[in-house]
Image 1 (tube, rainbow over the protein chains, first blue to last red):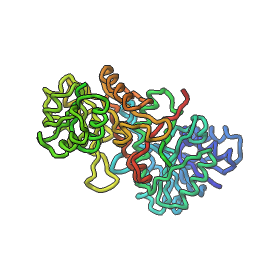
Image 2 (image 1 turned 180 degrees about the horizontal axis):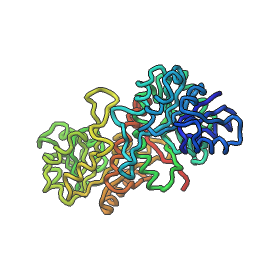
Image 3 (image 1 turned 90 degrees about the vertical axis):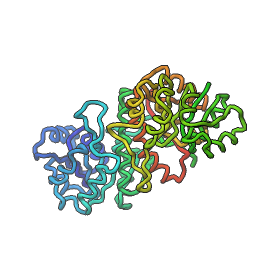
Image 4 (image 1 turned 120 degrees about the horizontal axis):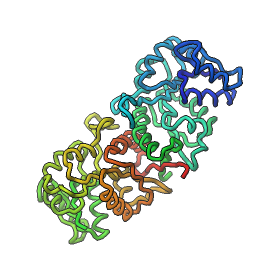
Length: 217
Length: 217
């Protein structure tokens, strides 16, 4: 499958590398076609399946797009990528609206009565937005087994078919417990979890953890 | 120990009954001294250790106070209870700032850059506010074993001695995994968890669940 990744940070790098390893063709997009971090990533994969380009190049290339830019920037990034390159596609929103400008722990730039996932879906109504993977750190996203025991990953979105394809990718990453919360408004719950996640990360001085929902089946 | 419970709802009833069963003297406070729900609760315990009174009566009576009123009302309730009756005491804030006025799922009346726990501590600086138990449903609070497997409860607050006493009470309820997040500002994380909790409750059509943090020790 052809996958376009928007963003050159840790999350984009980690997901891109895993997807190349799984045999997908991955183009990493950034503001410029010759971004150095994207070039380093392409080189690091030692694979002809990895390439780089502008945000619009990556969006045009991918059948499935992954938004790996910060939640506070991603609407701007997606506009640069171009609505015409996003239309009808599965757009996996991995972002979190963390505001680090006032130090740690960050507040969220949007929360409670709205979320980044919803903002993206409203701004690009023809995209099939699926919120996923934002609830764990990058190393856990692609290798859930580094956290011991049973633990869970969430998805939400308005399009069932799109969610099924994303769940398949999550399964390929090694995820077993995938909790589908429903439509894209549930992004609020997935993003607000970060307020607790970030405090646990600070307490444990490690991002390598995750939650498991315990209940009677 | 003498415990004052503020609020006559499900949470106040459930905690009050358990505390009486554990041998504590419990006074349930409400707006009037003859509140019918409080009278029913007293009767239901079949114990001389249970009593009722005004918010001020309950606050004056208790060595430890439990705020079991809604997050949106509790500052008003605590003012009725009287700062002089709260001063120097352990005040366990079990509340959540859920706003049901616009239907389900509720948003929070305060979130992200503030929390009810912090509001209470700021308004009553001489109280030893400990946020606890707001992250699970009432039946789970006092009987964690109804949820299978390992799962976790959180506390936060500025006073270590107060937190130790609250942890002891949680232990008496059956809690084994008690995660101390630090000072009262961490109430934000504990209250924002409700955005995910409420969606899981709606999905599973049951409040009998809880989260467990999985990580390498």
